[in-house]
Amino acid sequence: MLLTILYALVVIVSLLLIALILIQPSKSGGMGAAFGGIGESVFGAQAGSHLTKATVVLTAVFLLLSLFLAALIGHGFRSSSSGDAPATNYLESKAAAPAVPVNEAK
Image (cartoon, rainbow, N blue to C red; front, side, top):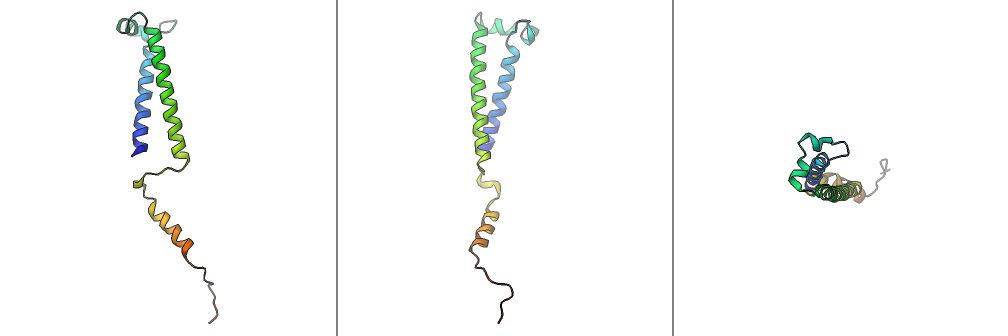
């Protein structure tokens, strides 16, 4: 459940980042000018600095979420519904079984 929520957050933040980057006017106009200067008309005269700050914040959030997901997956985090219980029980039963020779003379 936690992994699903984190994946959804990463997707949402990445889509917001894409939108913010496309709205920002570049030196040559870019996609911001293709929409009729939507960045300047909606966000005011200081839109460049506010959009830049929002981009930096969303980039930091995206980086932290990605690192957290990588750490969880790298350390073998599994949710309780992943179905790993039978494999764990099998390994525990193998370790607990006494070692008996196959060809024991009787």
